Image (cartoon, rainbow, N blue to C red; front, side):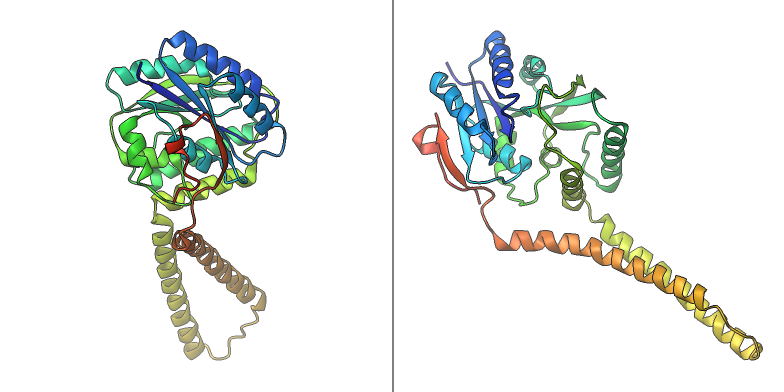
Length: 320
């Protein structure tokens, strides 16, 4: 029987949840009645995740393992899993069980109806702080307003994509990847299924504030150049305002030469304000230049230490 579905699961220090993730995924896929494979990508875990994955691969040949040489990041791990997938469709799901595997059969059903991409849309997020919920909602809507690409709001990487979409995604070699944005950029016929996001089954989040900000910057800089235009607009506005103020000072000096100008504090405040704006704009430009630098180096996206249960002709060490 032809392999129908590949399930890609990025893993980083998930020893506390791994066995439950495997159990639930296997149960769901067995009950779905389709031929499947589960591709775990060990993203440089420092705990027993790799050891446990090898044990699972020994007893279940439908489970594949891609073991990175080091931690390359969540989005790169997803990319590697897609690169090595064989199914007619590919499901991406995190290993922390916040995205319920039980929705995969519904995704497959939508795919069989003719949709190329079926993404999970969160209607609630259990067990997360107000700050996390607020910043996530604000970011998705801010990104949507900043780009011409229709990136659905309140969605993560939990989705099903058709083989055609997967092959098209392989042609996109950006280093600072934002997978959900790239899938939207590719186009194809898309639809959503709504679900309630659960709390983590065990362990700690692998997306602290620092990584969240990195992902946010990748999303914005990959799909929008409006921040650069903002720098130009703001610079033009401030230059015009400064010129008008200069004219005012000259006129005041000519008409009222005896006027005392003691305002050192205000002058210093204005200077600091303008210097701050300048540094902010340079920082935005620097973000784009840094990404250009990453692309120019042309290093591979990832390096694989070893694989398990993959065919010999599907074991490249790198992906350019």
